[in-house]
Amino acid sequence: MEQRAAISPGLPRSNPTVSYWQDPPSSLASHRTTDALPTSVSVLIIGSGITGSSIAYNLLSQQPAPSVLLIEARTACSGATGRNGGHTKCASYRSFLENVSSLGEAEAVKIVRYEYACMKAVHAFAREHGIECDSWEGDTVDVIYDEDQWKLAKHAVKEIRKVLGESDPASVYHFWDTNEAETKLLTPGAFGAVSYEAGSLSPYKFVIGVLRLALEKGLNLQTETPAISMRATEKGWVVETVRGAINAEKVILSTNGYTAHLHPALQGVIVPLRGHMTAQRPGTRMPSEGLGTTYSFIYDDGYEYMIPRPRGSTFAGDIMIGGGLTKASQKGLNEFGTTDDTSHDPIIFNYLQKSTQTYFGCNWGDDHPEGRVRKAWTGIMGYSADGFPLVGPVPDEDNLFIAASFQGHGMVLCLLAAKALVQIMAGDNVAEMDRWFPKAFVITKERMKHKFQGRLHTTVPKDLEIKQPTRTLAV
Image (cartoon, helix red, strand yellow):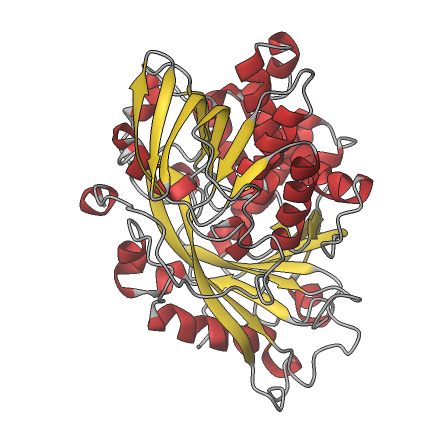
């Protein structure tokens, strides 16, 4: 893993795979607010995903608002946000016990409540601002195929309920036994399942909506403007792009897996991980009204996540399913450190293509006459050594800020992280922010020293492990 973490991410690649959400592209895809690239600005944001766009919106909502320039290497929202599964899902029980162990109970509780609040805030923001992004709120279910994972889920939920209180909405979970998982959730062969509140949306449409709001407030958006390098000056930063230099008083890196390209001190601190996604037409025996919940499928060393497209959306009933990392050679080791979203791992894609029929068994039926897979693509996520985002002023640098490394979990982390960063920059309501924003998310020198070991919170911690046979499904 050390060798993979040492690979420089470089710039985002030209001609990436096209995600389900980006077809057709928005009218803002290649937007440039001004023909000429501004040469000076108060705040420069690099990266136009959910984090960068939300930071821009929050900055421009201040009174008085600074001048804000947002640059994107490719088209608008062409990175991780525009390529994920569209799942607003916390799954906080999956990391709660380890967070209690490493951070303490109070901070672990703060993270649970933060994720839940962020999930709710995303859908509330879309609703309040009239962003048409197929926003859906309901339940999700984690179908579990490994006995240790099943026992861990029960233990973790018990602890969350005990600490948060059973009336807290972030501690509401429901368990399904083997028979219920098969008959009600249509997933034979599981030990059981756990359901809780979640949601889904088109992440691309959501971000485009946020960008439109920011543009109305005065944002200058410049797409297809890769940042090559940057250097500190007495007055801020000079960022060199393929279209010229920008003098900025403050720079914000919302570049996720690509961050070390611009700030090499973060090499190995944020490590890219390529993720794989597919959009599949449902089988002939799947419910004609569509599935009523989103899913994850959890096994001993990994998981898949699945989001049915809601009624009223384009291709309603389509199934978005991603994951499959550990099915690749060397448990997916070579997916770490890669930023090549122009291609894919054929083993992972083959696994994902078969996985829907595998998980639903005889409930799947025959494939759609037009074929099972409507679209397949990849995207680049950013991971840190301790499994938490990096938000705040970059240590040992003046006027350089970051909000990145969202662990493939950004839809329930980024929106409020953007709000927090803007508050940190302004020095406003710091005491109030401390009540809701986890200290574990703030970038520090100490966190930057941690050695990257890989993706966290996927396997059962050793001190909780009980060796039992794993239920495997033939693929």
